[in-house]
Image (cartoon, rainbow, N blue to C red):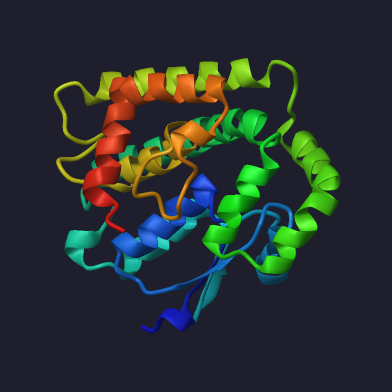
Length: 253
């Protein structure tokens, strides 16, 4: 399989895109990443998969536009020691349930919490988007189009004056559940690394800013002070410690 046969359309900083990117790399599946800024990605995602979101994976026999579907496809291609879903049916069911839970709760709330800060940090986002290698014309157009894109993000995410507090409450609840589940265990489900662990770690990245992320993220000191304080608190939480450990041990870059 050649890298050119598999194309992953992403928003580089997106934690859902990180989930797909990590699954491809863990499964040793070569691919080419096609990176775009928020808003600009719509054209490419819709053209490829009639989808408004990223990631989108284009491979020789099809197109997938959901990170969970991409993980399952990767698993179908992976050798035994690189599979992310347990062979045991009961453990596989629990793994899938946890993955869905993290997608719907942590992924959504983490993105919302992050955007309540970063929508006011466009110069910082553009600085790192240039490092990520998104098309230069998108970087140049973003300041001009940003009022429209910001409005669309506000409407799409349903941002309100309480969004930051509401999102934090959900993230805290997920972290507490994960910490409770991990007591006396090394992993969330089986005795080995699964898609539940990968998904939790990838989707927590929006609130932990881990090293070894799939693209370079801002340094903690570059972020708003209040944001820094909360990230540090989540990093000290047992679930945050687990996610950072998963990144150190299973996300080689």
